[in-house]
Image 1 (cartoon, rainbow, N blue to C red):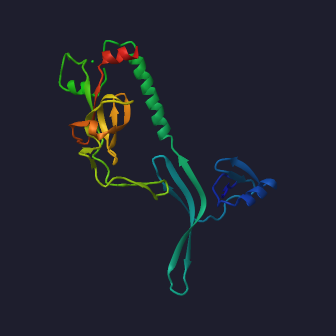
Image 2: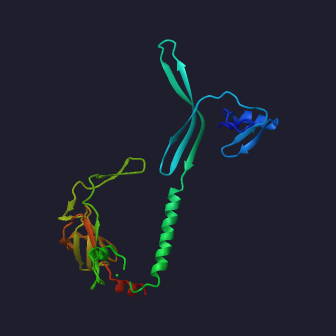
Image 3: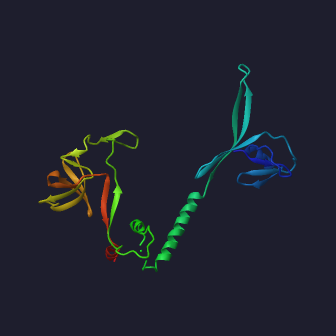
Length: 256
């Protein structure tokens, strides 16, 4: 890495190599001005010839690249063309504090929210559904303590039927058909298992398998290995997953 050089009156000179800077310091002809970037000042020199240098930047949201380059132009004697090349003199990368400041502001905002709401138990709770109910000018909102239907977009499946490993090579293949025995992943089903370890009713989102043994995502967890013979469709898959959010009274009772 090049070392920046200043003359006796702290005017910039051409950068020198690390070896030359070390010799100048050992012989007492220079003193250290800065450590980062490393800069020395000559004691016995005033002014000098310099070459044009260019400071080039590559701005980024998190890191900005900095390069100090010297242009070299050569003339091709055969074609007469001028070839322009750049010689890197000094390189640096500047990491910004934007992400750190954002995280600290988020942490401060969370602390302030906690302090503001810890003694305000009488306050219309912060949910998007209640925000929608309060869009218009209201003096009061009644009947707000009721469960809300949570709707989550899940999509209608993937067109890619090949699973790849981390190197990009195939490691498995999915079924070419999305429907198995009239069922499709995402359907809301009710299963009534007559006997065995999984005997009883099970209701939730189904994940089909080519073998006809399905998995059902219930409110209590995933129940695996339910035969399609015990399943009944109550709603076809439409690309969304539905669940009921408990009321604040039920949530407080559950936490307590």
